Image 1 (cartoon, rainbow, N blue to C red):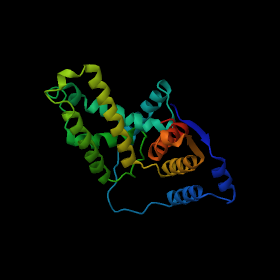
Image 2: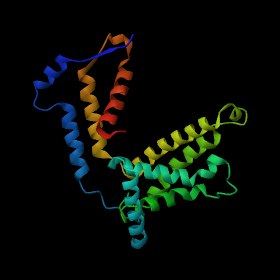
Image 3: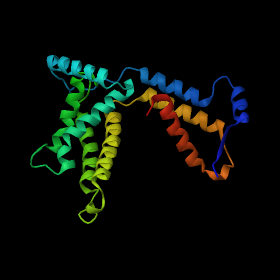
Image 4: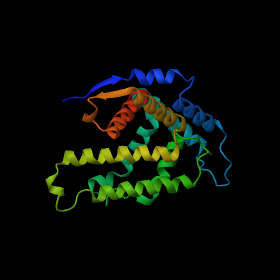
Length: 228
């Protein structure tokens, strides 16, 4: 039996008694915090050559025309594209040919993102490279150990490729959060999720748990607002 979803009139009427709801006030507060200038850090910033950066930005503009995507997905797709290229040896087991040093991928990734205009020049701290490397190490470990010698033959090649691409997509999201946390966007998602969860009722209610309901609303909000 499929659950029936309706909007709660009581929840809507309840919110109409106050000029601004709590989720909206929270959203405004977080938005104001995001507008404050960042604290000045003494840590050195990452700088890339301006000429090389202009060439890379031109290339990225051409890619945007050919492979158009929503603005908010461009950086994430760039991260995923770089990871696929850098970790090809791990996927194909041709490490002896594609000798990429896993411990240096984070630095080259960040530099390439800055050159391509996906991150600002002279603003990203050097410490971010170590944070990105820690994220990468986690997912590289998963890639290397996902299929043991005893089970590797059971999975088809296409299934392995799909798994690797899924892992890289998740890694790209986490790396983007490390390099450029979307404070305003996340605040909007959280506020809308809270508002919609209050207004939506599942009939009969026992067909879906409250936790599952919140999760489904959260996913729907991502897809609606930012096409994620």
